[in-house]
Image (cartoon, rainbow, N blue to C red):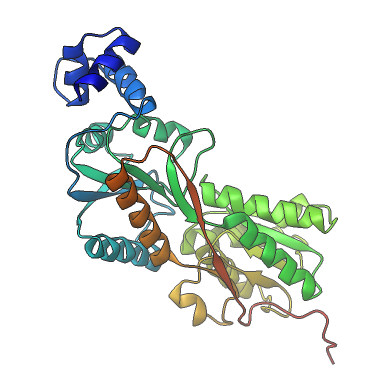
Length: 337
């Protein structure tokens, strides 16, 4: 401990007393100084002597359009809670709403407490939002997002490859005009899924038609209303769409049916997530199943590993998905009488 403080003092030029105060979250050290000290401490592998005995599950909502009260996130929370209990850690759940005036102060209080590891649900967060977490002094694992050139452990779905597989499936069914229903908010998941779509189409040497990409609000009602507005202009439609998630797909399906389109006879649709109501929709939604509970379990496992080993090497873990074929995709290879 003393040798670590001495080394940090030599590297930063601050006194050992200042180093100790910063590392132990005591008052009297300004923000810039504390951040510089914590960064150097992290770089040299400084290990806190404080024992971590609980896990904070931080659900961070930027706008709440994606991270909402849906079966997807209910299953994720259940998976995290069960995995924490299995590992012998208490779970404390925090919900941070960026619209709240005091949200940054709440975050600072959370990351200053080095007696608890942090699982951060970062689905809606941007790189700028993540900067406040860069110099946290406690073990941290980011879930459902990743950020290039930022040193975080991350666990998320294999989004890009999953959507590429969906494009290949549509090609096997004879579809060549394939559109994309994208969420109109920025999330890493949506970005990577859109990338998978574009790469797969490029590999098939099919040029993208910008008219076949429709941006929709990622809520059931929002996607329905936005799709109705789009269809009201009488556009030419592709033979199939892939959607950023099931909620967007189901909202769009409702609008298409209202405008007289038959699914999958006129338009095919593939979703992402495999929410419970996707199986009972009419027709049943073909989709990409993501294992939320498994993501929660793996994230907790990685966090516990960091807690026990004081690990400083970060990793990006992608959870595999499963393609679920139901009734919302037409087989264009079959002859229709």
